Image (cartoon, rainbow, N blue to C red):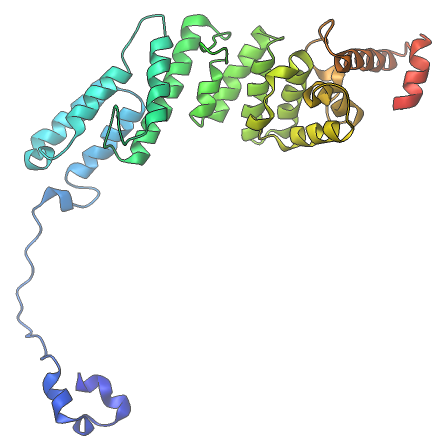
Amino acid sequence: MPEQLTFFGAPEAVPEAIREAAPPHPPDDLPTPAAVADPRQCGLFEGPLADIGALEAACEQLDVATARAVWRRAEQRFPEWARDQSWPLWLDDLAWLAADDGPDASPLVARAQALAQTGPSSGRLAGMPAGLHDRIARGALAHAAWRLVAAHGPAAHLPDGRPAGCLLLLAGRAEEAAVMLAAAAAALPYDGLVHACLGEALWRRGRRQPALAAYVQACLVAPEAVDEAEVTCAPLHDLLDRAAELELPGAATEWVPVLADLEGQVSLLELAVEPPAGGPPAREGARLLRTYRRRRRDGALSDSRFALFGRVIG
């Protein structure tokens, strides 16, 4: 517009052709636009969107009854909007997912794992927004874990041998997983996989020392149960790297308890269980080191077998 060109001179200086091409001022008496009636364009706190929030929350909890009730309310209030939605099919899938199979929770575990693996592109809940699909899958995994424990107690395991708390780790609920796995570790003190999963849960909660102690105990009782590829605990990786650098005989995981004690990171005396009898040379070293620590603590180092040992490790 000419008024916007005054930086280059007075409006009279603007060429006539440019002034004629400029759009005219809009009239001052334009009518106010009519309000949009389409419920799909309503605000967050009106229309069906207000019900969708409650619907999604119920689905995350696998609360089929509440989810159906919320959907019926939205369907009655906004029938035209509801006709375009896939929620009736999704709620049927939710009912399939949350079905009560009695004391045997393994079918629920299988359904939850299948849902988590397929994603929203196919199978059950197909077409659902990816974020909501993921939250429901995580909720199903957590629900399955607690159902397993309710049916079989803290020692409940999945068909592949992992403790039930692993499902909570997959669901991203590390705090709940730590609680469940701590109970499992107390019930199964020589289950290396339980201790390894507990270590991972504690590490994800930022509890460095208890996490490393749980991993050390796993390496002590069943080093083969610790899969380095699945470990995110940085101090454990450091210990495994040092064991590999020293070229010690056997697997690196077998030497983690000895190295952790010698470096002052985790005392073998603090572990809840004694090293099992037999096993690789590293376990015999851990057993000897634990005995030495105990006798030194109790002031009973008269045994000549520990004289040289004590001078070596200090």
